[in-house]
Length: 145
Image 1: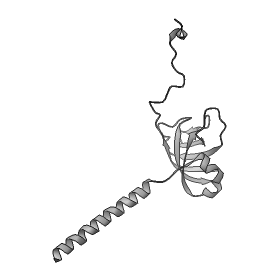
Image 2 (image 1 turned 30 degrees about the horizontal axis):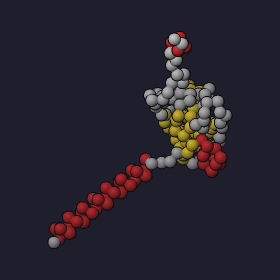
Image 3 (image 1 turned 180 degrees about the vertical axis):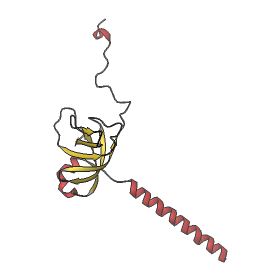
Image 4 (image 1 turned 60 degrees about the vertical axis):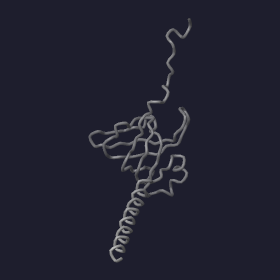
């Protein structure tokens, strides 16, 4: 009986350790991100707090220096083309992500201080190959027969 009790206790300990590792791994990787619409009205609350913000790189806002690896840009809301939207400045030091470009959806991880998100990581999304082209292909000759 003593042997069975040790087996049960050992098994329970292994299951508990495995459960704890799963719980901490899920908690670490499942952090919520704010959209620009959620962040801007409450930006004072997030001063010097670690956060993740999702948005779109504002057109004409990218400033990258390859020598110092300094990247600055503005993050704007996911809005229709031509719609006016508020932006937030982002500063990042590091290698610019390969897919980083104007109009690209990004998630920025960092801290908000003095009106700028000091990013420690910039994550880009891949363009979908299933999105429609900006200009639909018209038949040659305007389609007249």
